[in-house]
Image (tube, rainbow, N blue to C red; front, side, top):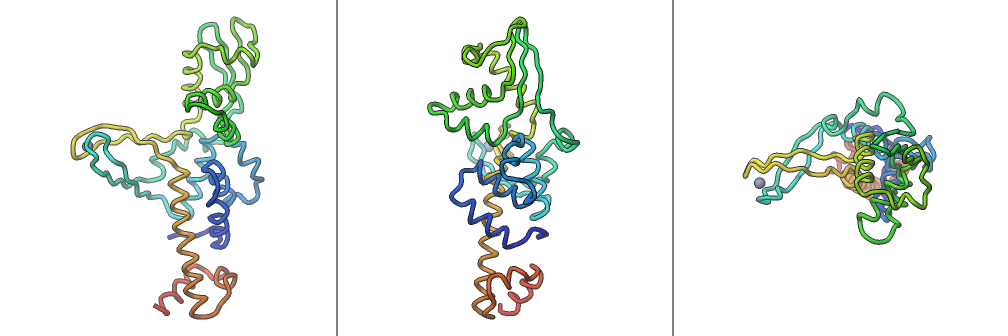
Length: 251
Ligand SMILES: [Zn+2]
């Protein structure tokens, strides 16, 4: 394991993130690798950009290979996957620099400008009561910057009366503009031949990995403190390699 993040910061982030919603957990994890950037600024990143940075941090801490499980929807066979982080993200699209703040698309008489959803937008959409589709509609509406029909600007009040088809087209355009916001794995069941897609939830995946790692770190402190009487901060100041050497000695 290639640990280049401070052990104490990892345990602190784990503590902080435990009661949090996944949207906030993502920002808590991201703050680990970008302590120089204010949390409110991290919350303004498009989701695909956020996930790209999370994956970069994951590579630094745990390396590039990922071990995943997925259940076949047809025969319930459990698939075990070994993937590289580079297989999950379209690096070329977002790594070349900042994303455009506003995108423009035209459909028939409609001319639409939209921005990419951020953590703020997701949190806002989740507060919208009702169905999942209502929350999704709220998210799309929140990303709209300008809507014109035959050259006439449509105000906020009538956006909710836009045709369903147009909202679907906008939704697809947003997804296309931010390809890393939703990572779908194309899978093929070796047992029954079923071809299916599985959503890769990077925040939950990473959180589970970090939580397990943080618990290991706490256990190391416990074992060394009990044996040698060192304080937590003394133990955290040691390099991971030295901690492992001591742990090996006390068996
Ligand atoms: Zn199957």
